[in-house]
Length: 354
Figure (cartoon, rainbow, N blue to C red):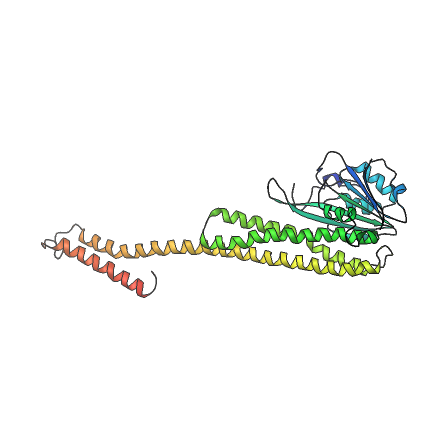
């Protein structure tokens, strides 16, 4: 399946707001995890798909429902109906080709992002869609498969580290988005290290494998750009939002997140330029190598042209050729050819063609 655009065949001709999963199913059965916390209490457990989610929400604590398995239409339809999420918003959540964005309706602030990571088996750069639905005292996170992206956040909640348990759900949403942006920087660093090492190899060698590596890296950088560019827009809209779900205290943190996003995007732009320059350098090296080969061949051809001329005259079949029967004619011809060769090499060297 293409990385830059997904197959939309299943959604062609469907009504707006239809709940259709666009993308690849990445796990067999969905998994639902619940974390409920306040400054003094913490609870964590797994839920069944037919759970009454509304009954889990309370005003004196924050409820975090994490759903692994974006392909489960029945489960997400249940979530949509219980929390009164708009059909158009849920349609975007189910579309793994959705551009990262922020959606505001009367009851929710929904953020859709991409997580980028290197696959363990192939070391190829992949992505996964992540959605965060912020409501009054609750947040629902939906991801394509089970992952460990938010394990550090869960550990902070379990051990009451920092201010996270004293804050409301909007702060948790910020923390989860911030974790994803931090992962951008980490993966950009990995990709950047490979790109920087490549430059020295390009200068020293002309291996054909380098061309494939360079074009793969350029494709990966473009893939990262597509995922990161819209996150700045999300941060700006969160800052300017007048919804009561995001407090003024939390908006201060979104300013830092915007700066972090700009830093990540600038790093991506730098490495994109670097890979483009490396491709140009590789192509220039190949051209220079071809030119060097052509120069050597041209010099050899230039030297042999007069020698062939001399040998041709000497070998013509006429009785009356000057010095044809001269005793030392053969050696005189060789002497003339050697003198011409040395003279031409001296001339080429003087002109700095050698």
